[in-house]
Length: 507
Image 1 (cartoon, rainbow, N blue to C red):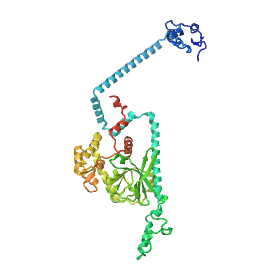
Image 2 (spheres, rainbow, N blue to C red; image 1 turned 30 degrees about the vertical axis):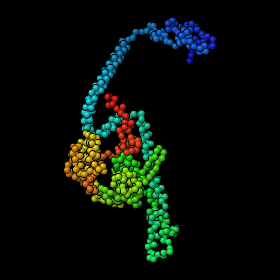
Image 3 (cartoon, helix red, strand yellow; image 1 turned 60 degrees about the horizontal axis):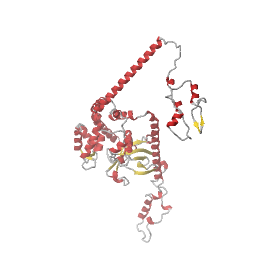
């Protein structure tokens, strides 16, 4: 609000406002002449058209009298108690300021030291890593915790929770879309086009010993309803197709694009058949569900169960399904380059699996015992190498991969026994001869003397579980902008920023 008694020197269209001399007695104080600005002096210095009002800036300037503290008269003297409190607070303020100055000086000195000798920073990091080796956490877990410390923002927890819920809903929606498409594909198949319709006609033709030359063969005649079957053995109903086991899978491949394909499989218990579909997204709004492995009865192509038909017990998280690439013409060319197509089960509908299991399911005890022994052999080797991999695991993994690529002259990913022994010797991964021979017999199930070095690494060193690998694939798909299957270092630089890392901030 503006006080009605306070008026400024304004002159609009020749009408003069109240003069400054009439306002001063109201405030009870008078400013020096040097600090007062009058409308006449401002107008003389800054000429303007007559229509523009003149503004007196003198009322906006604070005077020296306003800054002075008004002390009442006849105040009692402070007591000793308040004097003591005043001295204590004054001492505490000085002490805290002194400590603050010392900390700033130490931080400045340490930053200068680290910038001048970055080698000290590396040495300290090595010492810390050696001390951390005694902990139960792995190197990757410690790096994840370190990144979470500088990249995590408490304000974004709710946003991340909502994003995670949205991803779960989207994944369930994809599975539902694929399941509906599978039902549509198998229920909409016309019975008239079933190959079984020709069996009765061929039987009739074989019964005619001397067919009439003037009569057209029965298979070329116009078929009527009386000559066809209303239902064949391969006719499926919704009730039959509902007894199925749904699972998620990924391709075990060194091609990043193939490894990131979204595969959803179904195992039907009524005939022990198997089919796999691929969920593909084109752009932002267009999606399509395409059959990847046609519905049929398949057998194991390698391992202890080679030649055995797939059963319900063969499906669990971490299981590997093998197919011949030549049997499926619709597969991409990058997958057809390999003889075997290997699919790893990453997730499974556990509720449906428990409901489909029955006591009458046949169990092959001898094969189960052999597979258990194989896992024990690999676990014993991995326990021996665990300590060495704990200290320099990343370097060994990357170094082994490059070394195997150099030894692979043919480029098919297969190496013989001598190459693997040489690689273990170069990287100081000592394994007893007995354990190595046992592992080689398990991996070389074909007996051709060569093994894929990816399988050898996974067996000897081990691999991440499927839950952690799902996050690796998500990160890879974020970095692979062009969907080429490989990520150059320039794409990593675009997506990864470490400027808030504690070690980066400290120099």
